[in-house]
Image (cartoon, rainbow, N blue to C red):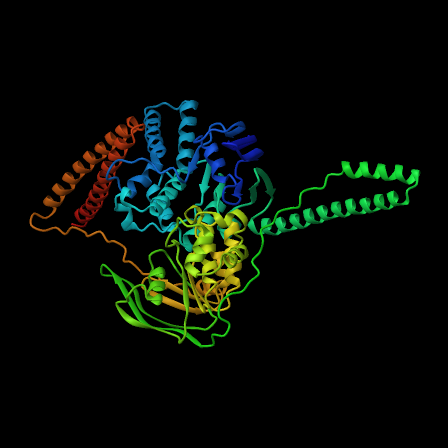
Amino acid sequence: MADITVQNLTKYYGDRLILDGISFDLQPGEKVALLGGNGAGKTTLFNILTRRIPFDSGVAAIGEGRTVGIIDQIPIVRKGASVDSVLRLAFREVDALRRRQSALAEKMAAGDTSEATLAAYGTVSERLEWLGGYNYDYEIDKVCAGLAIPREQRSQEFALLSGGEKTRVNLARIILEHTDILLLDEPTNHLDMDSVRWLGDYLDAYQGTVLTISHDRYFLDQCCERIIELRDGKCDFYAGSYSFYAEERERRYELQMAHHENELAEVKRLEAVSRKMHEHGTEHLAKRAASIDKRIARMKVTDRPKKAKKLSMAFGDPNYETEEVLKVRDICKAFDGRPVLQNVTFNVRNRERVAILGDNGTGKTTLLRILLGELDADSGTVKKGIGLRPAYLPQQIHFANERRTLIDTLLYDKNVTVQTARNRLGAFQFSGEDQLKIVATLSGGEKSRLRLCELMYDPLNLLVLDEPTNHLDLLSREWIEEAVEGFTGTLLFVSHDRYFVSRFATRVIYLENGTYTDFQGTYDEFLAYREANPPAAEKKPSPKIEKTRPRGGGTKNLARRVTVLEREIAALEAQLASLDEEMNASASDPDKLCELIAQREEADASLTEKMEEWEAASAALEQA
């Protein structure tokens, strides 16, 4: 039985056809990526599968009894709930199974050894093991480490997190739930490169079914085995990873183009034959010509396959010959007393392509802004080469007046003629009615394209990019990369897109814990270097249990202390059992459940502390 079934699915928005009778199945354990340009219907299909929006006809079904995890369904939690309590919502089933397991164990201890009881106990135990229920604190720590959720953040109030932080915590929660099916819409957004790599490895080993929308090409190669591309309301299928899809898509385009041209050539050949027959004027040839004309009329020439135009232009100042573009010396920067950059020193030479990499929060954008003069360093200097003309493409692009059309934006910002503006916009794939669009209505990729169109007017020699492919679809990413490929000057960029970094970086500056590594070479060479020379791990001393030494009353006081601790431990165990019963009864009340989880965490921590103290006191009593 398929985990996901879609048959003849049709969806309209008004009179616009989004999904045109598409059909496909996802079998258990398949890892499938859903690709397509903006507006192709990817998110619409996700919303249909999760019953958020209706559809017009067809079938869209999840397999009976299959559980689904959805990344963008942020849970509703009680006011003041911590990140840790949200993560522990993943183990509501575990807590219920533990109670069921305890009840069955008590029945067996009382003498019930029936086959039904033994089978039920085995089923519960097996499910607990599958869910990681015997050691879920370890499971939480492992997933949080992989997704770079710091331990100090886990005690913070969930509601106070940023949107990106909430998404990352929610991704951790659904991973911990061990659902049968994962529906992931851009799961790598807000993740650094190491976290993306961890998530890709996790999904590759995941035994359930995955349907993901993603524009991270390395991630797709890492964990997807099949591609479904939505285009013009239809589905195209590719039995392989993204790399296979990219090559196969090009091969199919060439075959379709060859077929189209062969059909056109045949029509032209027959038309020429018919024309000559008509020119001869004989009755016999006229009849043959009429027959050929009927044949031509019946022939159907397939549509010419569509393909996005590639950029074929270079920009930048080819005459800029200053060798040292930037001299950076001993840059230090701290925020609220926390050092972010410490004594960062490097030179950037003309025509280098430098990637500034590191985990989230390591100061990459801060360093870019200091280099551009937008932010003051606490200490250190930045010296720019003579005649340097930098341009900056930030993550969020804004225009002075976004109510203007694209043409008016170029007229006002660059003081050019209407014809020049049209020509420039056309070169950047804004043609026809697109040039009359209001800037505010553009997508992120279109705004990046428009800003690059403006930048290309100037004789630039330093291009600075901050996450240039973030939130862009695959087509926009490819287009931005073609534009950057045409830049002849020095490139300095921050990116979590491993595909982009691998394509352009000839040098890597890696920020980590306030320090940095300056590596001369490609990104793949840098990864090999890091693997051969891993950063020294900070060794933390293992916690030691202090042994209680007899004093004053000797063994008598120790024995009394052990007895008191045993009573306190018994009381805490009874409290935990009571809380478990209340949690089971409040399973449908999220606010109450979160409150009980917080109380249970506190009681569990107290129990652990008392157990450690009891062990130390008992050991000291035995020694005495």
